[in-house]
Length: 166
Image (cartoon, rainbow, N blue to C red):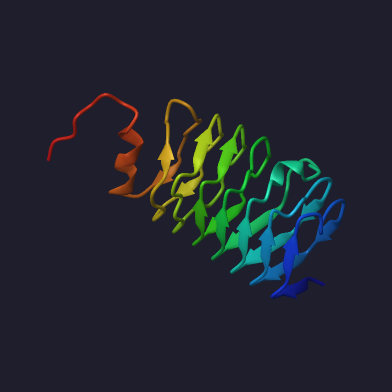
């Protein structure tokens, strides 16, 4: 049975080496939380605030299984992870980093991605519908059947030396 942890704050080394399975974090705060060797499986974050969390340190098995709904995330790092089909829905991701991240099938719908970096990521079939403020270089990432909404999809042309006319 799934466990819910509500309105808790996790700082620094609170979660080193922990195994967290089938847990929902509801309106919790994670501040520079150290996830070294933590195993996250079936974890849902709802309405949480995560600042400076480095998810790269999680123990892979082969991927990390997490879902984020209505979360505020600032300065978090998801590089070098397999996050296939993960959900980042209706979130505010600011200055987050995704480098060499497998995000095939991931859902970023209705998410603000201000200053979030995607580089060398697999975004095959990822969903960015109704997402905004993303800066994704189509030449530096794998895009295949990736979903974007107009007018925000125009931002995909930023890296090209072109002029758009109306």
